[in-house]
Image 1 (cartoon, rainbow, N blue to C red):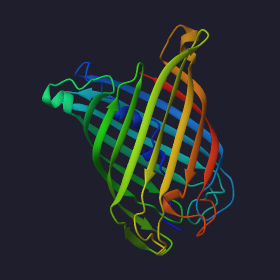
Image 2 (image 1 turned 90 degrees about the vertical axis):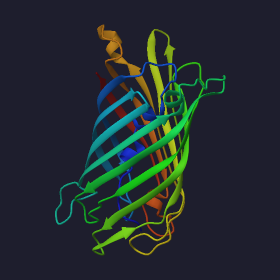
Image 3 (image 1 turned 30 degrees about the horizontal axis):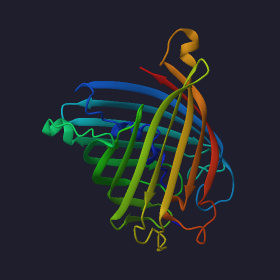
Image 4 (image 1 turned 60 degrees about the vertical axis):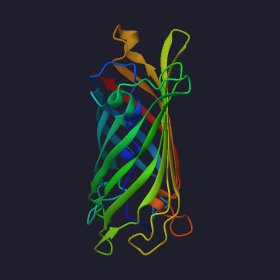
Length: 281
């Protein structure tokens, strides 16, 4: 069983926005979001008990002269089925992720939009986390790889393939863990549309991370898949303030959580509905 480190960022409902750098858009822009997610059917490696989790999110995304950026921080609160170390209360975790997408169109001053590809670039970034459960995770992951922004009629669709390098901590065995460099592929999307008079956004991502060597328990890690989607309704429009408050259902699928195969520990697969809310500024 590998070190427990949530992918709320890698995940990232908002991480996808970092790759949505339209070559035709203005050079500088920014949007900040404060949001929350709730789920009652989460699992974590090492236990088959269902965990309810509340997640608060602060996210900011934007564009600058040479590309786009995203910064996200999640505060995750579990119930007592995912307890803190040496206590009965639910564990707490802070997970931060940041990405910079260096746009070839912006840097070279060349338009790549050919009807299929809108832009290409280089993605760099990190994931950082700390958690107060028995594993005492202290994850540090660095990532780099080429990205492609596909031309879609509305919204965006991004594909990234690259490498990631992670170090972490295992509080059970009291040792730091240095994982092997792993390949990582991501796709993310956002599509606005209408259902009758309601404005709706369908967004999400899929991340696949290859094996990264032995974990903190000397178990060989396997390919890990995480998918998260949400269908967000523009509730703010009903109050005369469109694009200010969104509410909607979501879904999360996670296989071989943290690289741990199901043959090595229970709770390494997650398939759960979520409730999501976002305030946009």
